Amino acid sequence: MIEELEYKKRRKKLGKKLSKNSITILFSATAKTRSNDTEFPFRQDSNFYYLTGFKEENSALIITKENKKITTALFVQKKDKQLELWTGERLGVKEARKRFKIDNIFSIDKFDKKLLSYMQNRRTLYYDFRRTDKKLPDSIQDVSQHKDIGYHIGLLRVIKSEAEIALIKKAIDITALAHHRVMKLDKRGKNEYEVQAELEYVFKKNGAYNDAYTSIVASGNSANTLHYIQNNKPLLNNDLILIDAGCEYQYYASDITRTISVNNSFSLAQKELYDMVLSVEVTIIEMIKPQIKRTTLQKKAIQLLTEGMVALKILKGTTKNLIKEEAYKKYYPHGIGHWMGLDVHDSSPYRYKNGKEIRLQKGMVLTIEPAIYIDKDDKSVPQKYRGIGIRIEDDILVTEDGFENLSYNIKK
Image 1 (tube, rainbow, N blue to C red):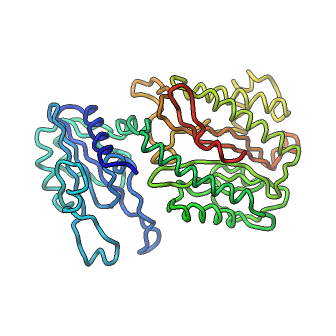
Image 2 (image 1 turned 90 degrees about the vertical axis):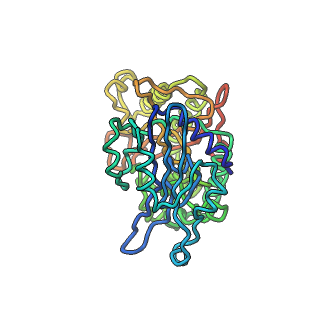
């Protein structure tokens, strides 16, 4: 659990990065329609949650900075017994004032009026301009400079606190239970969606009420579709199953991929490809330490995967030329990994605004996920490898002098 004091410290850190005489406006997420008059389960906007810890919709946060003085205001829904009968209990203004270490807390119906007073003498507006579901009020036209707050929050989010790391570890522990359950399951004669159901049963049974993303259960050639989520094909006896599934625990994600066999036995060709990908993953993870660049990890992964594909006669030519021609992209089209935290693909930047790459630092969490994807109709590769897709993915914490593989205990 993250204490309220930590949210206050985050707002203070952010405030130090803001311009003088500025205003920052952040809105909660909005409910999304699923069909007609039904909605998807509500999930708070990650940046809003990062700064407030508040989980309700129809709310807003304002941060003003005048010289060095920083003032915060949270706007929440009023108590309304009639609406709460249908949609659930709200915290309300009175309880919010008791719980949150925020300067001022108002009802959301006072937002427009209060905003006018907060806008006085503001030269700079900070806002998350990726948000297309919220219309900014016309009064912002009086502000001469508009800047992206998402970048600044992202720089804070990329370094995890001890409390955040503990929640990520908990999410991974639950995900481990789910992956191990389906590894032990007799999968012969079953369908991909049955495996998905087993995974998500374990998530929810252990308090992870949300998936971090839609589970991928891709058997046979379906594993060569990177974001395959149909999960509706029968499991054939000698096929592999690429399972990319992770839960979200108290808003923090896990992201794990394992490739297993329907009948718990690998053919020689499957083993050759699996061992190549696993060897690359182990090597890249062992390179992780503070000050190394993510692009360095990417280049090494490409080199090793290309060398492996040449050795297995999947690619023909010299490693140097194949890399220069980007021939590897046919079989490995994505990056070696990504930031992970409140979002499974955390929105933190990979470069500073000046274009300089952000190097790894203690407290960062990222995934490492080498892979190979060979379509069943690719006649340019040996027949024994066709229709096989393999990805192996772990969640890695950068430590003071190296790394900790947070998902090490999930069998490979």
